[in-house]
Length: 418
Image (cartoon, rainbow, N blue to C red; front, side, top):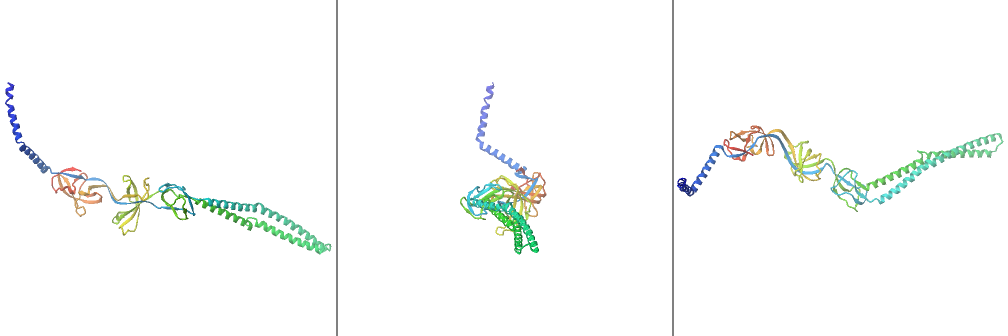
């Protein structure tokens, strides 16, 4: 009995399937039409999907962007103080050196020979001074003692001869001899006294001996100084950025052989458009990066603003000091710098692309309220790059529409946050 009931249903289902198949295009079109009507109805009731941006609160920094290069505060040109031939160059360009490190060595054979000669002359002069102290003066003092003794004897003999002559017991010849002897003795005393004086400190012979010693010492020091100049050393720590000397070259005094960039603070030298001059102040902070290392930023401070303007480039030279330069920073590297010229710590911020008539006296935005785009007048504060500070009109958390949204004021929308 079950089989007799099911048999009639199969032809009916088959007929329905055949009808659907014959009318498949009409049915498909009806389905598509229904979907389209539903989509249009949804857009009409709920509005189109529109990308919106939130009003946020945060720090807003206005920067002046410029490019420049790296320099040290000053550079030291290193040269020779004497004329000579280079025996060896001990450093390479780009090498870091420390104060006192030998850089260039000159030939010293001639200077060493002069040093030996000057040393001998000094030793001879020292011996002359010692001779004055140890021999000449003591001998003069002894001669003076002997002369004084001779004078005393001559005076005694003269007194006796004079007494005998007065008593008639002596002759005139004896008295004349005594007189002559006393004169000779007195002359010998004066001569001995002069010898003692000249050989004593302050005397002419002693002064001459000391002068010769001083001259010999000075000459030796001069030769030794020149010998020291034959090794050119670094005057301070730094990096050699230029080398203009090779082995075998004859160098002249005063000619720059090497250029040293001293270690320590570095400067970033920028040319900034003069229209930004009013925004710049000494002490402003900045973030910089070398073009060779764009992902590594370092701090700098504005320390110099040129008082004049370069009329050919309509720019102002500005220097920033880098107190703690990174190890990779090199002379004349190209750098990009963002100088912070104004800052708001907790500002209400919107993207600049959401503000209509931003340069006019009555700027406004389209803000999402009750599912519709509403016109809201705003008061603008600081403008920094892609963001604008809003002083009045909207609050953090609200959503604003970009200029390119194409939405009319009052239109219903479905906001989609960017």
